[in-house]
Length: 285
Image (tube, rainbow, N blue to C red):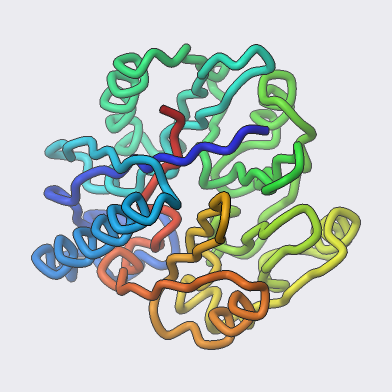
């Protein structure tokens, strides 16, 4: 599968916590410091801009946030962009589990339409939450697909006939890891960083059948530090991981894999259950 090399983000102007959509949000309502959150978002945006200067990424695009869409800043969830076998750009538009997040969708529809994508919609009643639960494996025609807490298994049955490549369903059982992008990072077709506690034995067995080299990340870093919600950017000449600062064991494991590491602070967004990976979408241009 051809990998995208541009970034899509959503400005944090209306970011807030007004309810509890996951366990990380418990007790966090009204605790967001928006000015700090904006600074953290701009720091991440600047990191991506620097990676465009270094030719690791192509471009950084921004959609303006919308009043009443406090979670919209988590741009990994609303869509699944891909290239079909004929080289055409297409995008699956998510159907979010929570109705308040469904309000975010029109802005993404407008963005993809303006870029010439063909928009594809899931069947009525099917929940699919974008790249939060669909992870492509660099260098392989494989999608790792999480289900059970947000995205439904029925969605994967539908997606496997649309997305290019093989789809590997993996059940998510731990409420702290409600999306697949919170508990694993496929590095290449041989190597996976993952948190054991996110999966049952059948999930571990399935993962073990795919990857020769499994690197277990301690739950303290995965759950509390969102270490596996880092964003691994696979470039032509180097791989770069952007990660929440302070995850020392994960950072050491990445460096052992010849991954350049950039640390940043996303603590205000972690209150909502997301870090770097959640705050962007990789898109084709």
